Image (cartoon, rainbow, N blue to C red; front, side, top):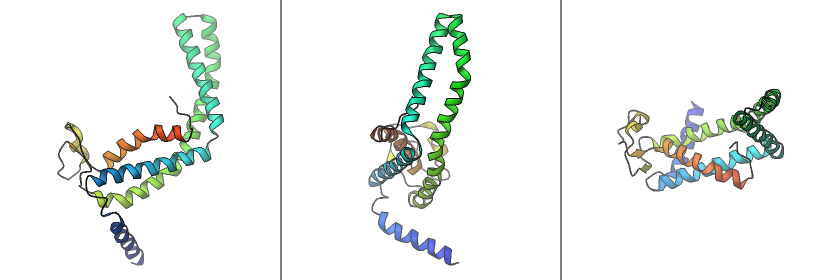
Length: 180
């Protein structure tokens, strides 16, 4: 009983802070700021938990191997193909290590993102955040029971678009190498 009242009190206090921001078009800016903050926190975890120089070296090895493999496939050189086959298990191991290292911050960030989602989603339920200049036929599948047209994005849709768009810039800012 106490816990429920405590949570309700926190949500009412938080609503008082964000009520100006949850109305379009300010909700679009609020979601953008929230995505930027979470991307910066995620990049900070990435920078703290992953040895970026080692990651860079590993990515360079994988890139060199892929170029060698491509060359071997194009030229059909048997000696080069044998070299590629010989190196492949070591490269697969390096790729597995890269994936493990990059997933560690994700596992730490996931609960944080879920908490942010749990806190902010009730304020944006069934409220459009962004009006698209075009209609997307399948968008109604993501609106649940709410009546939003196919040219409106809610909090989650806009958050996903903005977050994925901002992360490459945040990666460059923190000098974190990308997989591509």
